[in-house]
Length: 165
Image 1 (cartoon, rainbow, N blue to C red):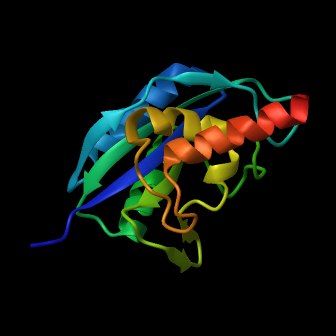
Image 2 (image 1 turned 180 degrees about the horizontal axis):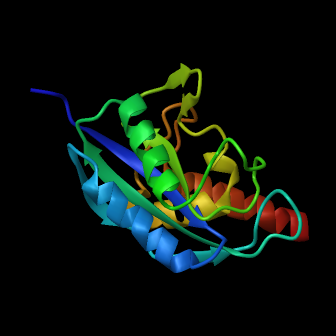
């Protein structure tokens, strides 16, 4: 019997029918083989990070239980993006996209392979990732930083306050 792992996925969209693409991404997660969606966050609207002139994003997070390897899960995420019209080979990094699915956490594993880094290397720096993820997985510990998702969000919020003061 294959080991099942709890994984956290970040979702975002800022092109076209943003909510439609986001909900399609969530539905796609539930359709992956050996994968069950355990929790979905609320949808939050955020300003774009990266290239100027982009529309606002809608973001969400999901927690899944999967029997897929991290690589197979990532391949599934990329296929869902592709069905939503995203071609990663053509887009600019941090540019506008119909659907973005990021593998944020894969159990407590630390993975560094070509094309696959888990935990996601920037998740702790991004409110648009931490805010929805904290709703459904606030007690999950980041395996590198040793702090919970909720703690990371509070620390990031504290940095934001410090920058304004």
